[in-house]
Length: 130
Image (cartoon, rainbow, N blue to C red; front, side, top):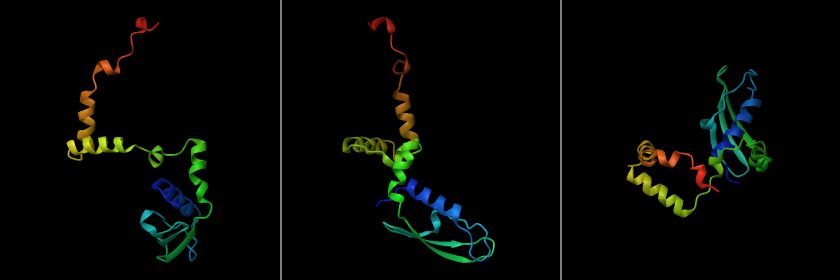
């Protein structure tokens, strides 16, 4: 199973909601930097309790996460960037445009924003539609 960043973030949030320090029972911070090893069916995390400075090694099984993305898309909460599919031609065009703007998205967006005219954004002439 391949984990995209959004799925990984959801898993980390669920671990955070359930994770308490075994020594002092306080909530333990869990974030991306806690993940030491990620495999197809498990995560290995190293956590540290802020309250008592206890170190915790957590082995989290990922059984049941196969349907995590489909459950999100049913509710309309899925992030489109994690499932964005582009053709090779579109990727090539994007790379060329980024190369022209020296890798700056700011330059890229300003360049293409300047090319968009008011005529492109105006509403169509309804009298010609019949």
